[in-house]
Image 1 (cartoon, helix red, strand yellow):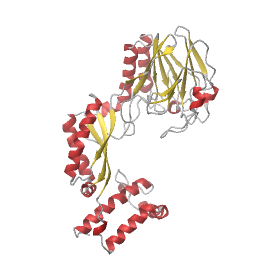
Image 2: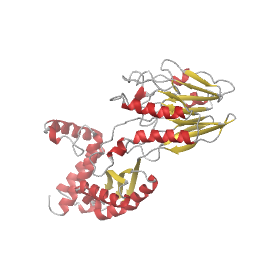
Image 3: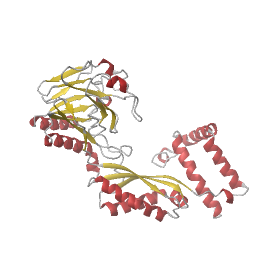
Amino acid sequence: MFKFIHAADLHLDSPLQKLERYEGVPVDEVRGATRHALENLVDLALAEEVALVILAGDLYDGDWKDYNTGLFLNAQMVRLQEGGVRVLLIRGNHDAANTMTKSLRLPENVRSFSEKRPETEILEDLGVAVHGQSFASRAETDNLAAGYPDPVPGMFNIGMLHSSVTGREGHENYAPCSLETLTLKGYDYWALGHAHTREILSRTPFVAYSGNIQGRHARETGPRGCWLVTVDDGIMQEPEFRELDTVRWELVSVDLTGARTGSEAVDRAVPELGAAVERGEERPVIVRIEMGGGCPADVELRSDIRKWENELRSRAQEIGRGRIWVEKVVLNTRAPDHGERLGEGPLQEIMALLDELEADDETFAGLCAELEGFWAKVPPELRRGRDSLAPGNPDRIRDLLGRVRPLLLDRFERGEA
């Protein structure tokens, strides 16, 4: 019997995602999260006495700024060497051969597969054959899996591949291949990297993404880690997912249907923030809050979203006792339908124009083009920051149009317009 770990997408020293601007965020802890997650991986390997660690690409986040990133990785590999653990790795698109200008010799227990052709590592004492190929370039467009060798008879065969299998949403289509190509190869286990979300594509044979070991932004939510696999007499037991992340990202959805005030909206978010803290299990938790539903509070929230974001941050500090932070609040709320109160006149015409802008792609594109010309004349200092107009971003313009409607309606009804 032996055990191995399948992990991928370490993205060591991935840059901090603009959190320095938020009061109280543990910047050093977040910045060091990818390193701490790798330390957790090594701790797990030693505690479980695994024989082998498989790293399926993107150990780095790109070329090193200095040698410290490489030195840190090597130090962790030495810890595994001292524990008798072998490491097999491939390079992915972020650490492809032509991407890295710096390098360090890896410790003796580490084998890095060539980018020139598929290779096979035979581990006689374990009865294991591991097949893999690194990326030669960042934009690897060839189907690397098609060239992998046949399985070695009588051995437990593992394929390592950094790939967009059948296309993965949110990821470049690098080293593309079909699931059928993998399942028909005859291997017992395919250790995949590239997609950052953990996913099992097949169980016979086992084909899976481990996901990244540490979430890096609000689109990488929930537990992150690796697969721990036990093989007994050539038969694989059900792989176990083990959490490695040290900072947790969460998406918190709050239903504001019927909420009348901004304060009520904040109150409704509090239980969801508390639940996020519980899920984090003592980790620092960074949340993005999405608020939705039709409610009278929509106008008040949109009229001063910065205030309500910081109200929520204040409540989060109280709830989490320094362990939860609000990264951003996204308003998907809408004001109640006031159509019957518009009557005839200029307000009705304005609302009809907004309807047309939102519904007609050609009219909307014309608006964006006009705004581009206007925006080019705006002083540079006014074009920076999260609240900038950004006419080249259609989603941003649609968001602003959504904010205009309730604000105009509210001002007309109060006689301020």
